Length: 160
Ligand code: THU
Image 1 (cartoon, rainbow, N blue to C red):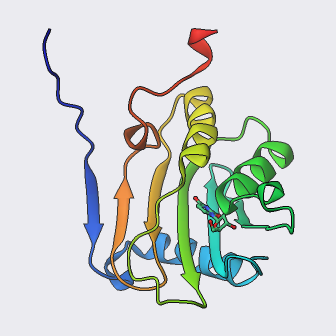
Image 2 (image 1 turned 120 degrees about the horizontal axis):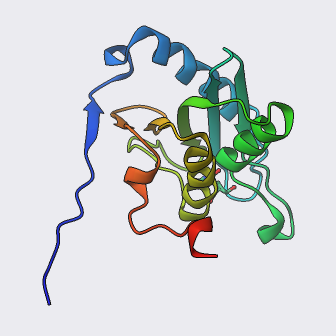
């Protein structure tokens, strides 16, 4: 038996203005998407903005439903929109932001497990890392250099 360390490296930006200017613009688009979220049940709005290699920015937000499990996360709305409109076009960056009318979201909100799994397949297929930036409504922003760094020991098509 032996133990191994699985290390994830992230960069922390203390505030929005510390982000590179092009990432500020992408995050601003995520905020725009977040404000249009349909989240009447959780009151937790999430916005996602994807930058594609062709320069297109694809937005997504969470879409809830009275039959709760029928709702969908912002990140998957965005990545499936990109995959359906621009199949095969690489994703360079993803910006995520969340806010709530119940509380001030001041912690970075990372993508849920199902979104990580979904995004990982796109990253693997395109053979290029997707930079992920995530924040709450205010406060720190976390950057990871790839999706797979958020999902060690992940499941992929090679097991099938
Ligand atoms: N949500 C997202 O949109 N993305 C995530 O990664 C986590 C959760 C949404 C789903 C639901 O509409 C609300 O946030 C509360 O869970």
